[in-house]
Structure formats: C-alpha cells, structure tokens
Amino acid sequence: MSTQTALLILAATIAVLLAAGFLVRALTGTDRGARALKRRFGPEYDHTLERHRGDSESAHRDLRERLDGYGDIRPLPLEPAVREDYTAQWTTIQERFVDAPRQAVVDADELLARVAETKGFPDAGRREEQLAALSVHHPHHVEGMRAIRRAGRSTSASTEELREALVHARALFEGLVETGRPTGADAVRPRSGRHSRRLIDPKGSEA
Figure (cartoon, rainbow, N blue to C red):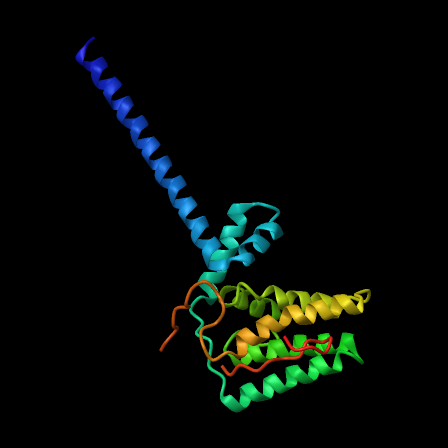
C-alpha cells in the first residue's frame, strides 16, 4: 500500500470518527434539552407536545420561546389586604356557583386574570401572553385557566363540567395568591432586583 493511499484511508477514518462524534454530541444535547424541558414544564410539556401533534422540535421551540420571553418575570408579592380581598372574592364566586354556575365560572376566569396581572404577569387584556407567562411559572396548574375559559365560553357545558373547571382553576388561584415561591419545578430568575385559607368546594364541602 502506498503512503498516499494510507494517508487517504487515515483521513477518511478520522472524518468518519469526527462526524460520529458530532452526531453523538448533538443527539445527547438534544436529549438533555428535552429532559430539562420536561422537568421544567411537567404536565405543560405534554400539553404542548400534544398541541403540536407530537412534533417535538416545534414543541421544544415553543417552550423555549416562552422561557426566553417570560422566564425573567419575578412574580410580585401581594399585600396581605389584597390577598384577603382576592380570597374573599374567590369564596364568593364559589358560593354563587350553586345559583349561577356559568356566571361563576366567567367571574372566576376574570378574577384569575386580574390576580395574575397584579402579580406582574402580562395584563388581562393580553390573555394569550398571560397564559404563556403563567405556563412558565405555574406549569402544573395553568391548565386550570384554560379549562375555566373553555367552560365559560361553552354553551353546552353541563353544571358538572362547569364545577370541575372551577375546582381545577382553584389550584392556580391558590398558587397565585401564595406569598412563597410560585408553583413550578424551578425557581424563576429575577428580572431585577401564605396566607392559607381553606376554600369551599362549589358542592359546599371544604377542600
């Protein structure tokens, strides 16, 4: 075998090994990124993947854009009096559910939006942005806001479906009015620099 042939074979071998190394690193990095997003978003990861019809690349891009856009939000603490007022409003909404379930659900949706705005999330007039931001900081409970919004807009939702939506949304409400860390897998990064009250289930029992 000539020296030139040996050199060509060696060069080809090195090229193949380098390409394989790049591929392994790329795949490993992608896998790590997916695992990190799953940990960060929990059930919101699955919801987003489903919304993108199983297209993981699109779902990951969606979630990363939300992190880039809203990850630096630092939820503001609520003054005790404000927290008490919001809690009282939520309790009243639940009590009114018995006589006017659909209106109670609509009122709960509006209250959630106001509380989120008070906490420093996008204002109530930008609902989709608000939802996106909440999905970053409250990924385990943001679906409650979607559920209550769907129920409030539906003309065919049964009383039981409306009740389930209200109960589902309560977890997000409680997460928003807490004085501690927001619900979610990780602490949020600062942009700059509990009161715990048992609420009444719409059926009338404490939860």
